Image (cartoon, rainbow, N blue to C red; front, side, top):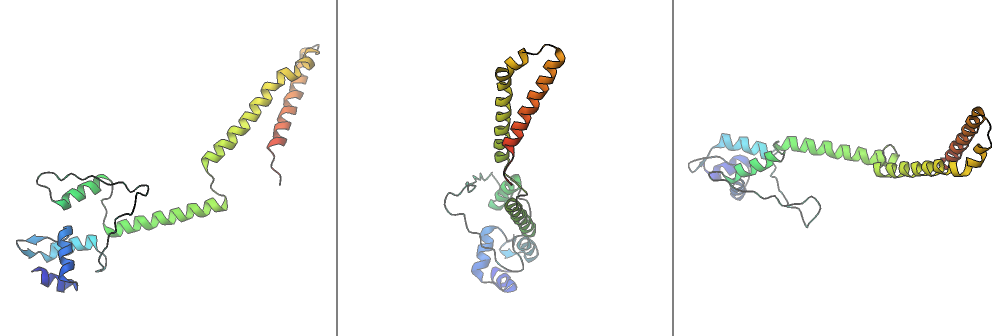
Length: 184
């Protein structure tokens, strides 16, 4: 069938069919449109007879990197595009892509909710807080010998030294616990 009849079949203008042809969505047998093959391609790229409009990203937003496509000898533009998309993991039809997008957006919304609810925290903030606490512990433990040497020196037996060291360590740990306690 010719392009005009194919346009009538789908209830679109001839200009729309020309755009489909330019995009590689039509299959031709000579000068005639192969309706069965073309409809299969259109089903892959269109949904419910609604034309798809692709708007290129504006500006230099993060992630909007241009993709270089090298057309190989004997390869159509459609084949080159499919090769590039498949190599980058985008080998799905429109319905599958929409499903993946919706799942991604739902997970993103759930993550934002969990973050606001306090169920999720930034790992860098946790690492900084833990590092700060470890620094306090290290500083306190390194200060014990200089502060407590005279006290330990006065001890006469091993049992006395052990008791004094036990008391010193308990005092240091209690001090560190009080410092780390947040006001309720």
